[in-house]
Every structure is written in C-alpha cells, then in structure tokens.
Length: 280
Image 1 (spheres, rainbow, N blue to C red):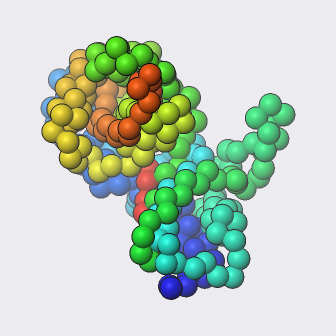
Image 2: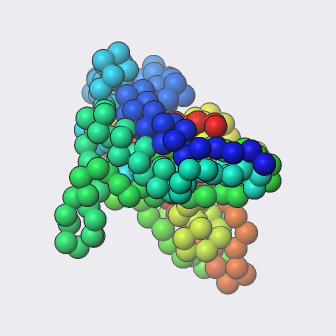
C-alpha cells in the first residue's frame, strides 16, 4: 500500500492551475502553426498570428493565456493500492485550486448557486471525475474550461437507426451553429455511447487527447479525419472571420450503450486548449 499525503496533492494541483493558465500545450501550439502555414485566407492567417503571439507572451511573462481562466475540471486516476493520508482527497484538490488561482491572480469564475449567482471568490468547488484502477498509480489531469466554449457544447439522444450519419450531422451542426462564440479554431471532443451523462464525460475526455493522436480503432480514426475535414470546410475560420481553420483537431471516444439508445455529445474547446497532468 502506497501512501500519499494530501499536502502533496494540494501542491501538485496548485502547480497545475498555474502551468495550465500560462503555458499552452506544445501539441496545440504546433497545430496552430501548422494550420497557419496552410491557411489560404489572409485575414485568418493574421488572426492565427495574433493567437500564436498571445501564447508566446503568456509563456514568457507567465500571465494567463486568456482572461477566462476557466472552471477547474479534474480527471483523477486512483490506484486501489493508494492510501490518501492527512485529510480528504476532494478537499485537497479544492485547496490546490484556491491557492493556484489566488497565487496566479487568475480570474475566479464560479458562482455558488446557479440561479442566485454569488461568486465563491476562489474558483471552487472544482469538478472532479475519479477512475479507480488496479495498482498504486495516482495521476491528475487538469483542464480549465472556459465558459464561452463550454456554452457551445451539446448532448443529444439519437435513435439507433440514426447511425453514423446522425452523429455526423449532429457534430457538424453543433460546430456550425457555434460560429465565433467558442473562440475558434477549436478542438472538438465527441463522445458516443454510454448513457446521457457518460457520453458528455467521454466528449470532454476526448479533448485531452494529444493533437494528432488518432483513435486506436481504424473505424473511428477514419471518422475523426473525415469529420475534421468537413468542419474545416464550413468556412467559420479563426474567431469566426472565415477561412479553413475552424478546428485544429477532433477526437472521438466511445462506450457501450443500450440497444434502444444512441447517445452522443460534442464538447467544444477553444483555441486556448489548456490542460496539464501530474503523476504522484
């Protein structure tokens, strides 16, 4: 049995909050540069240049990439042979968020009640998804999710007869209707299967996959390539100003589902596709 003290978890979470806010992941920045090199629209190229420059300034000066520093969303993989000591795991994560968002002067965006709208003042509580696995691993994956792109995310309960084409139409319609609102170029996570809430979690998990890493199933890898190409022919473009660079990447995650259902979800991530991981 391996023991991990909550103080170490809090410290790791604090660091993740800061690093995610300041440093755009290398795979995302590379995708921006690659698409910029192939973008035919002069206006779109100019917008991509500004986005790339913004990421460089954020990294060099250690300031937030975007003023919306997001809802703190965590995916924690917890081995069954790990024992958390010194306190409660979820509270340790929340304390790390409090410290990170305070120390980094990051915007606090969470309200304590969805209708009465009083700000909690420290960007807590976070959203935490746990995956219990064999062994003694402990991994934290952090994704600060901005409100503008999250508002453009969608879930739907299709009929099994709708099939691949039904999911395809739903994905393209979601991106097209989102237009400039999620600050494109976006990263699109698609969840297919499970039930109502599982497909949404799958879609958000998909946005964490490294840009360029296709689904291990050739069938779904083919859909990822096809749907991304079709999205980039919609003409939305960077910041909605036209061009071929509407999305940098599309990833699909799936799960078994009921014989009477075909759940699907699209999680839209903005060009500031921030995420960081830590292993304790």
